[in-house]
Image (cartoon, rainbow, N blue to C red):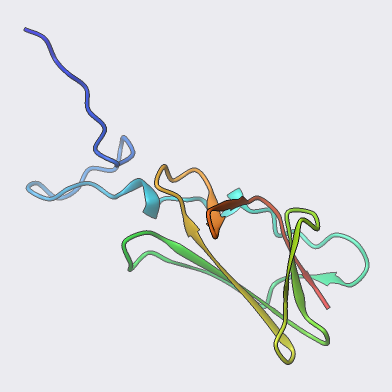
Length: 114
């Protein structure tokens, strides 16, 4: 008897209640996939860093507050400017559960600067 393996879009070890599917991989991204440690002059901790798993896939919202607040992405590859004294970035866990993404691009570093 042969057994065929299939991918269900869930991570191993995340069984659901009998009769329901397991947790989708896109709800399992770890917080440490984005380094948010302050680095350099003018950088500081994010005021808010929240993961929401209530939607189809997990989202993570980082909020930077301060004078001229902005969020630097991937060591300066991009910047999200603030409005007033607040800059906010929301990323989504990818289908594999291996990266937080912004507009389809993985974010591995986020820095709150003000």
